[in-house]
Image (tube, rainbow over all chains, first blue to last red; front, side):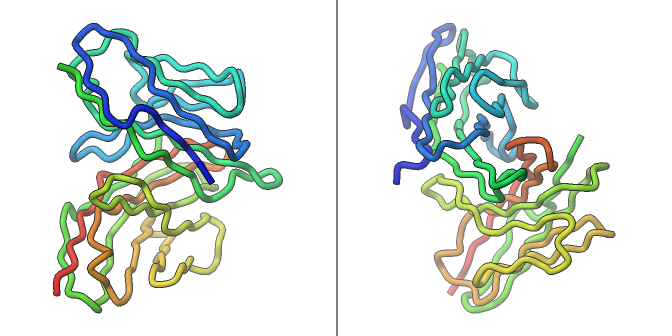
Length: 116
Length: 115
């Protein structure tokens, strides 16, 4: 049972570099989302998707892009990394039973990103 | 907009005692769900318990129960018979029905279980 897989687990970037954080789930879930976790601030929603081809912004979208070409994958792109993007990033997915979103959201292990 | 407030940055409890972690929420929506997640020092997010806004009974999962008081907009987590392995950060979160997978999190409570 792979669940939600995030890669890489750790990454150091220089200011101005771009990179993609990968997220894949094997549960055929419709809903996927990206969060960042900063000390003392809990998790904040960056972008989310309600299905392949459909994405929308969350609370803190600036500096990040997403796309969802398949149900399984939801990559997060940092366009030009800044020190303020140093954080731990989590990807999450949820399925649906009948008309309702399932109660449990499955989280990946997280990516610890440092921008220097 | 939704807001989750956790007012206890840190809590201590003795092993085998019960502990209550506070969570209050603010929303104008009538249909929503409330969650608690545990984050141990290893960093993963572990789902503990869920309460729907229309659920009449308080949710329970093993040693975890959710004390849901809708009129007061509170959703406190009660951990009974604390164990050393319960030492972790605990997050309360909310999801609005029809909002997909969008969770709004509180700032968390760091729980330390002592011998």
